[in-house]
Image (cartoon, rainbow, N blue to C red):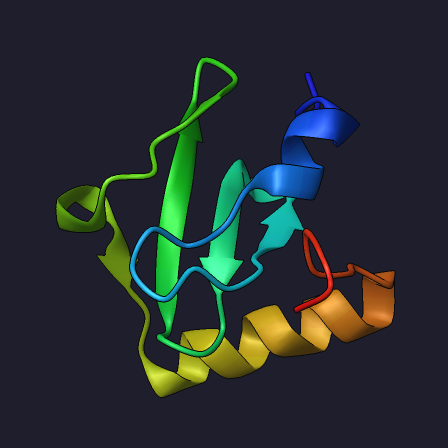
Length: 78
C-alpha cells in the first residue's frame, strides 16, 4: 500500500528538515543530501535518526538514477 499523499506532503528528514524521495517499490524514503534512507514498515515511515540507514556512494547513484528515470519528486519543495 502506498503512503497517503497528504502525509508525503509534510514528511521531512528529522535531521536536516529537508524533503525526501519516496521509493514506494522499496518501502523507503531517501534523503539524498545526507545519503540516509528511512524504511517504511507496515505502511509506517520509521523517521528515527538512529534507525536510518546510511547509503554508500554506489547506492546513492542508483537511487538518484531511479528517481530521475521514474520521475520521483521530493516530498515537498524546499
